[in-house]
Each structure stands twice: as C-alpha cells, then as structure tokens.
Image (cartoon, rainbow, N blue to C red; front, side, top):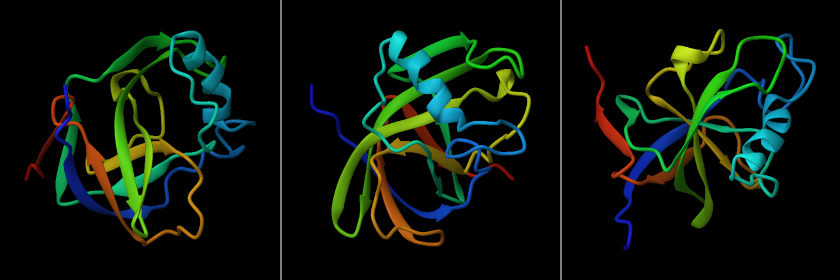
Length: 153
C-alpha cells in the first residue's frame, strides 16, 4: 500500500537540548542512551543523528493517533521512571533534499520533565548540513498515524 503523505511547512526551533548532548537533566545525550533500548525492541536508529529536529507547525497541532511503533514504559535511565515512546515514519525536506526519519514522541503522560508544545514535532533523521534555528523546513507525515488539527483555543 502506498502512503499518501501530508506535507506541512514548519520552522526549526531550539528544543530542550537533552537529546543531543549532556545537560543539567542528564549527564549524557538522552537519545544516544535510548537508541540501544529502541534497537532491542525492533527499531534501529543507529544511522541517524543523535539529536532531534524540533519543528514548529504552529498554528497547527499534531496528535499521534495510530503510530507504527509504540514501546511502553522503557526503562532507559535510572534518573526517573520508565517512559513510553511512539514512532511514525516521516520525511524532512530541506534545501530541496529529502531525509527519511521518524517522528519521535515521548508520551507526556509518562514524562517527568521536558514537555513539548503540541505544535512542535520532534524528528529523528540524518545529520543535515547547514540547517539552523529559524529555517523553514517541510515535513511529510503519515495521516493514517498522525492527525493534524487547528490549534485549540
């Protein structure tokens, strides 16, 4: 079955900066630490950059409704309780080049900190040369797995 992607235009925003490097919250890159757990559960992210792109699609919001993969209560650190993660394939377009990747969704109901706005989509993909905060970026998501809606007022 062919996926009919929904394409959105967003702006690259600075995130909490815990996925890509050690921080006040973690003495390591959280994504680098999580990758072996995800691999053991069936999702190999080893070829992707150790960080996430934080793409604002405001005033739209997204909801992860039927993700391709969900890993409940992953015990990836001893610094807080286990977290649930969902993933949906996506494509990111920057400077007319496509990069395959995954929408990365740590479920807020299992998180202690670093909550994201529902207008901010986190993406794991390959390293993208010359990209910087404030750049316009296109993202294609699977509408069978992710619902896009107008911001609730």
